[in-house]
Image 1 (cartoon, rainbow, N blue to C red):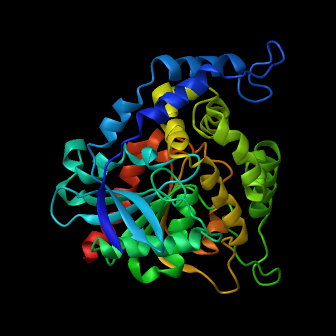
Image 2 (image 1 turned 135 degrees about the vertical axis):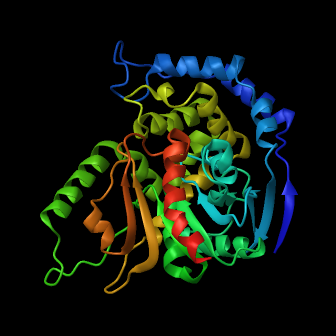
Amino acid sequence: MAIEPFKINISDAALSDLKERLIRTRWPDAIPHSGWAYGLDLAYMHTIRDYWLNRFDWRRHEAEWNKLPHYRFQADGLQVHFIHVHGRGPRPLPILLTHGWPGSFIEMLRVVPLLTDPQAFGAGPNDSFDVVVPSLPGFGFSGRPEQPGMNTFKIAGIWVKLMQELGYPKFLAQGGDFGANVSTVLAWKHKEHVLGLHLNYIPGSYHPYVDAAESPMTEEELRSQVEDARWFEEKGGYCTVQNTQPQTLAFALHDSPMGLAAWLIDKFRDWSDCDGDVERRFSKDDLLANVSLYWLTETTGSSMRLYFERRQAPLHFGKGERISTPTAVARFPKEEPFPVRSWVERVYDIARWTTMPKGGHFAAWEEPELLVQDIREFARQFRARS
């Protein structure tokens, strides 16, 4: 195991290839005036292509990201990219932030200064954190797994090794999407290392043990299950194909930058608190920085394979299995599907449940101040004990 500094530096050849492919985009037809009814609006995607070609500046984003301390960590035959920023103030708490799909380390960047320099944002000096933001295996600048089985359980084990190597025997774990899954596994299987668990999403594969005689499902839980099934029927097509045939889809998305942009931006529009106008939440620069990261690191296929791996190793809990780590849940209103509290409490030790006034799936990107405030308040109990 070794940690080495890392600098982002995409080649000029890769950027030129992207531009040439964008110029040669072959557009699909669309039913006139159908707008967004069949998926992404064709006219809107023309504006994305034009901006990507003529105004988007990858080098500007690259230079901005390189102002942060980036590293790579070698563990289990895999290189893991991560950012590590020390907090200002006395005795900052270590916190591990894990992103999901279709996000990346980029979605965590707005919360990093809020967590590491709290006084600059109106909080006290005792609210500081040492922040570690890794890129999931197969995402961004992390290595692409070459063997099957790189699921969230294995990733959690790598995260523990990383944090120990950084000198953090105990830490807070936070995440949404796949980050919530990995963080849950950390609190379940590596609880001796996790002070507290903070989630803004309940993992999609989560399923507690249900005893029909001793603890039957409540009417509220049954209604929630029906609502979840309806959501997946209407909006879960992406999940079905990535769960079962990610490699087949990868051939198309790996070869077409506009195909990749459509696949990813669709999720940002659908899952964020934007009422159908994605640029109410994310600028074209935001969206294309994330899409370009997937494209330029050639991680579209490897990122989607995590769905397949997760399906082979779901978060299913047996009789008597619980997570004893104190857990906080930040419930953002546009995050769907989301189980009712009683269903979550069947496994998690819920110490805090916050209903947020706004925000969606990409909480750290959409509502960084709300998310960080909830993390701060939850974390104070652990500061008092240290």
